[in-house]
Amino acid sequence: MKLPPLKALPVFEAVARLNSFSMAAEELAVSQSAVSHQIKQLETYLGEQLFWRSGRTLALTDEGRQYLDAVSTALLQIERASEKLLGHEESRLRLALFSSFAVRWLVPRLPDLQRQHPQVELALEMTSENPVLSDRVADCFITIHRDSPAYSYELLYVERLFPVCSQDYWQRICRELGRETDVTGHDEPAMTPAEIARFPLLSTHSIYDKAAGDWEAWYQTVDESLPSGARVQHFSHMLLALEAARYHQGIALTNDYMLSTRKDSEEFVRLPCHPLVTGDRFYFAWKTSRRRERSIQLLRGWLVDEAIRGGLRSQ
Image 1 (cartoon, rainbow, N blue to C red):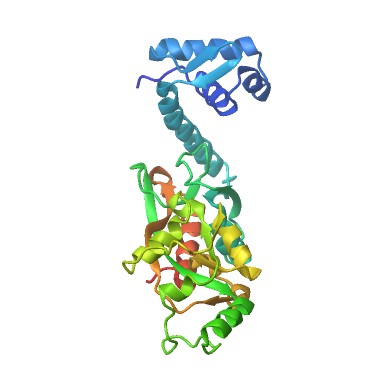
Image 2 (image 1 turned 180 degrees about the vertical axis):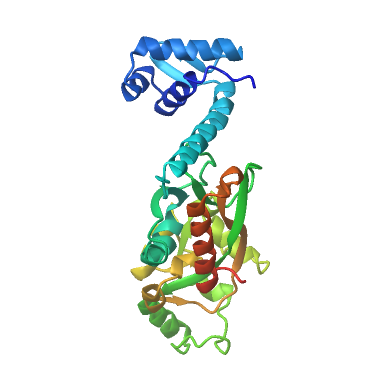
């Protein structure tokens, strides 16, 4: 077995993670020259430059980034295997996920996770964009992409958007349209797209990365265009648009996990309109090489059970 200088690997991981030779030296309790020597020794062995250095600027090369992904995973597996044999297996998991999914769906359910699996300590890493799948970011993820062959995926939710407003705003809509105020379900006459456009539309830019993109897509579902005279109020995030709807400012497009608690169901009215299937599919993702870790499998099973129980996915 031909291995690189093993002492250099934790040094390389620390420098790459901290983006600093001096900070890595401080963390490892060695001199900065010792860190530089280890990195030089590793680069000489590999025949590749791992870092770009320009004055005080330090950055990984493309080869360095590729090597870091493999090395950090290997070091983590060695650490976990050793801890397991020592009887100190770590059950702390870092879960990276969208802020809206965390705030509106996961956080209210964490007490149940703690009751069922008290041995699992979950640390949340929230992101406004799809998280990068890497051990350096988190141990597991909730993502809408399946672009890494090194990961396994479990479907949690197929997203659909539908119009909602506050209870008070629904009363106003009913008065202006001459409708009954009770939304009873299947027997309720559907609101037409033209009727919807009579009221302020609260739009989330981040869904389609364009102004009013969510409402344009909603209208296109029934082969119509967003009326040119529609009053659209723009928000960067669905959390903001939903809060505006909560405070009676108009009609917002939201999804199932944003309205997943009893309090939400009491404060909002889902308007009798057609839904929009966005095509986004939310997955729980974990590195296939870590599939035997009990804490990951406990979290996976709990998330699936909660998604089924809450109606996000079927059996």
